[in-house]
Image (cartoon, rainbow, N blue to C red):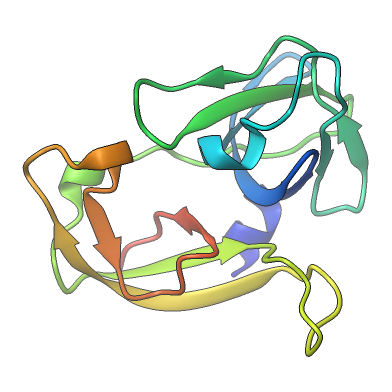
Amino acid sequence: AEVAKQITVKIEGATQGSGVIVKKEGNVYTVLTAWHVIKANRAGEEIDISTMDGTNHKYINGSVERIGGVDLAELKFMSSNIYKPSLIEDRLSAKSGEKLYVSGYPLATTTVPARLLRFLEGRVIANASEELPDGYQLLYSNHPLFFLIYIFF
């Protein structure tokens, strides 16, 4: 949970979602998120990225890129604060039955009216070897509204 807290970010733009810091180059950080979270943003519209320390960062205009033809994208922000990026692991290594965790900031509801960081344990339930629409080959038992953090035990 502590690792997930350090690397999970809240994204607010035309739509809302979560992401994971995956790279640091100097003061520029790269965030991996779902394409559906940021695809509705038009050029020049703001996207806020909130890190675990409560700091809101503006994305670097022009840094949004879709990754392949799947539901993944990256965007960048600049900060002099130090954030540790996540380790990236190939989804092919995930095997059915393995424990994993998801972390994210789901949308507010009437029951929970704030976007709080949630962290849930689950299991890999399938890892398709064939290509599926939008790249959803890895299936897991956790709630799908969270961004997947690959922490296997």
